[in-house]
Length: 212
Image (cartoon, one colour):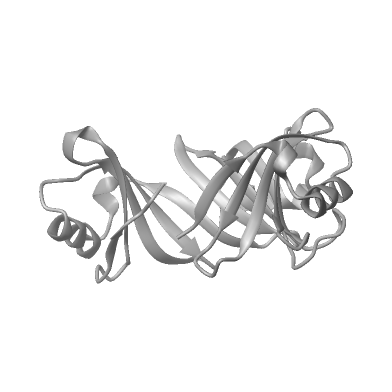
């Protein structure tokens, strides 16, 4: 479990701030969170605005190594055309709502380093679709909304058995890796109308609560 603490921008360690400004030199930093995991490793998550338009989140270790950043692409045309083309080829009629560039690495020194992934969200026939696409245009993972009555019976029965009468699903999403369904995510309401999510494996053998 992560221990997260909101900190003042002035309390960001210099080594962390210097790395953030090195990779993104036209940033206005707005907030910061100190994160500590179960292994007592510390990192900092900084949120800001790049070039006055794109929202950016960076993750930097206590040693000053940037290991991840996420950029909201306010202008989706800045991503390679093959990214969106790959999604539209798989889902004809896909309409893009939002796109993010996610970059991962052990020590990102500039915006050309690291593994670049594109996360696209949109709709097809009024149903939600999310896809993670590699820089080569390969769809690595995707989540698509299903009709509740089309969920395999073994899955819906497992959810009903685990949560009898205390959870009502409003929507369900199939989670896919490499075109293989690895599970179903149910969103709905629990006791007292509180929002809850559950993950169920395709074989119905595992049902677990999902923290949003």
